[in-house]
Length: 338
Picture (cartoon, rainbow, N blue to C red):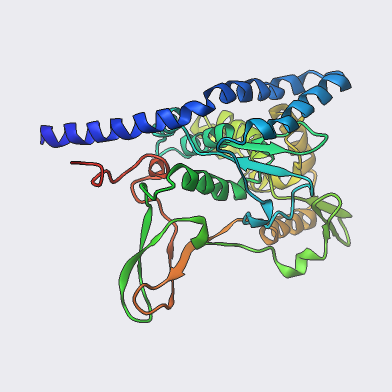
């Protein structure tokens, strides 16, 4: 048994060392990105227009630096269909390095906050977002598009298919039991309800819903940046059982769709939003609550593929065989063992 464990450890170590070599190309660039994410710190202090322009030019000029390993992915392929993004947005991804894989390996499947932080760590390191005229980064990606981007990074990281994630299924037509790959190709987007699309404003990329008694309600699916602030606020306000009881779940559901931009959005602002929210009458709340359900984007709860026996369409609930960490940590190293 000890010998087998040593074999596993040696094999895992060789795999990580190989990725360390491959990932070395990105180390210097990663340091530059960490400084650029200092844009988060810089935005707290108003800067001169010239300095902001310099930062933006540096952000745009990265294209040459990113030729080694960076790949463009069109937002039109995201689960949201790119509906809520600026027309000139550019999103690039690269493979995860061994350093980033090690960091992701400590994700706890039992802790939603740990999973969220792990996903965002991959986004921070492996995703570049450019919007002309704006300080932009991975936080501009919609929360519900994140799984698509992370899976795309994963597919770049394991180009040879050395870390397959397979979900078991049973075909309803022929009874065959097989497995399907957990990849973007097998995920289906959940589309926005047709009856609400007539309220979509292509200029603001938001829904402006005209109502009889509550005026115009403006909603938009949240970005990762918005959800990051809200998540921190929730963590601070659910430290004790008493706090968990007092938090308004209706407000928590609506809040992400009220805040449209993470820039300048701080936890301190949520209290002001909550005060305004508590002044809503039942009609406004009910209308807003139902619209939230109608404009949700993302992926279907099931993976879809074709039966390998009869070709019929099969589906199975999305799951992470081996846990969430198996997205980037090889769970089956049997092919690596001698």
